[in-house]
Figure 1 (cartoon, rainbow, N blue to C red):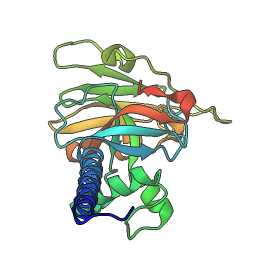
Figure 2 (cartoon, rainbow, N blue to C red):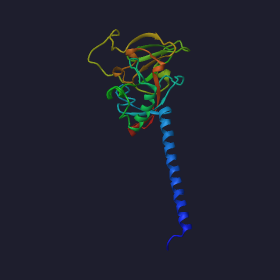
Figure 3 (tube, rainbow, N blue to C red):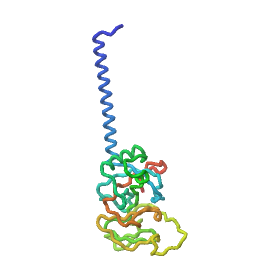
Figure 4 (cartoon, helix red, strand yellow):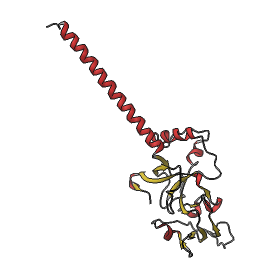
Length: 238
């Protein structure tokens, strides 16, 4: 039976209503994507461990969520953080924001950078905070000893941080004394305001404060929160 004029008019309205609902759904999806990208660019982003310097805690290739920091008030001894080393000149702020999104969506396979791939993979370093402003420190046999502002006695880094983590010291085929650059010893020094001392858990194979000294707080870019790949390491960062 052919459609009447009224039936045809109602059918057109139904089609317009269907198109309207579809457009609303598309707008909701777009809005959700925008909110998601905003979240990962400002609240949480991803980083891939590019070296063996944090073994045995974090192996090379491990991927983690980190919280970008604009202030270091929340940084404590024992925290694992993302830093720019003092010898690295960073990208501009807009490029950094876009890179957080691109890095998350591509599992760190792509970045916007003028540096070659190995350069931008390793432009950030992941290290452990072992001493904070005001601490007096010294190192013996790759273990840091800390005298805090409210304690006149030296304690090990493990006692001061209250966190459970292991360090690794690769053996050498030679004997060293305290004057050798790879002996794992450092003389006493006191950290000034805004200065942090950071080490890798794999002490002899880490590019850290043992070699280039204290790090300015402006170079600390984020705090690692959660490991999501590989799945066997799934969980919070220790």
